[in-house]
Length: 370
Ligand SMILES: Nc1nc2c(ncn2[C@@H]2O[C@H](COP(=O)(O)OP(=O)(O)OP(=O)(O)O)[C@@H](O)[C@H]2O)c(=O)[nH]1
Image 1 (cartoon, rainbow, N blue to C red):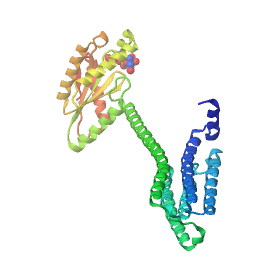
Image 2: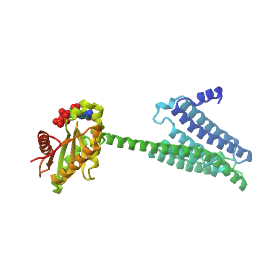
Image 3: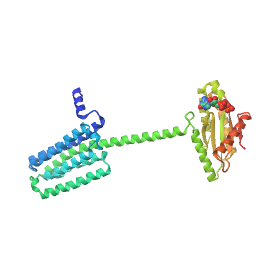
Image 4: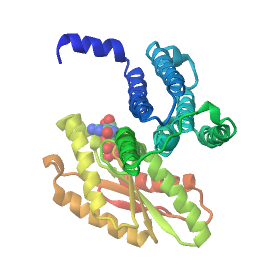
């Protein structure tokens, strides 16, 4: 677009996107006003209504169009609760429609068509109370207009006959004016719905990301200490309610400090990651594993220590075969079976003591708590 036109659009429609949106709504409403006015003007030529009545109506509509534009473009409405002037604009629209119905004689039915545009606009911003207000206002002012026409026929003197084909043509023309306005509003509503869907999806993803970050260990991807501790507390609560026992084991990689010192911290991280992956791979869906801290991992398995020792041996075999960071890695394990009534801390203390025994007895082994 040439610079001159760009500048003109900018001056007329403002740079502010919100203000521009409000002016687009104003433009759609004005398009309907101007279309309806054109039809009414042709009606004067046909002798259905008096020029005086039409001029008054045109004056009202012009005043509404101009004052709405000035108020919206200047930004004056931004201090109001309803910066789009929706209720005001819709009320003026209702008055214009009912007034048009009153004065345009035999063509009055099509004068009601723009009411659809008014209510479609309302769908954007109005609350149900405001919609109820506009509805009641639309119906009651139409009833008042009809009553006025019956009581004071001299107000709308010209009420000539009209040919049926002219009625059809008028209805078609009115629909041609109203439908594009409705189509633009429908397209905007559809875009808003799509935006809402996208936002909902982004929010759900963000929530699941936050949940994952809050419960999983950043380095290994398995449950973090907070999460596995919560699972342990739940296991303790469930075991006392359902009288089902379970066992825990603390697995601690042997001489991990030496791995870090010899291969570097990054390689140490690699060992932790591979250890977690290999250990998780040996578990059933009912078994739980989490990183307890540093080079320690906590296992929770249903049943007694026999099953736990069996699983630990499976893990030991896979770690030996896994050759972590091209280095042989072993681990020690302290195993404890939950006893009825035992607290989480007491159970952990027993598993920790058993781990200490395993380390003291030469590492690369499991020890079961008394
Ligand atoms: N690379 C890496 N090292 C860690 C991480 N967390 C803890 N460590 C290291 O793990 C080492 C643990 O060392 P120690 O507690 O002395 O135990 P150890 O060397 O495994 O000896 P034992 O347990 O007695 O066999 C420390 O050097 C910590 O710095 C981690 O996330 N990444």
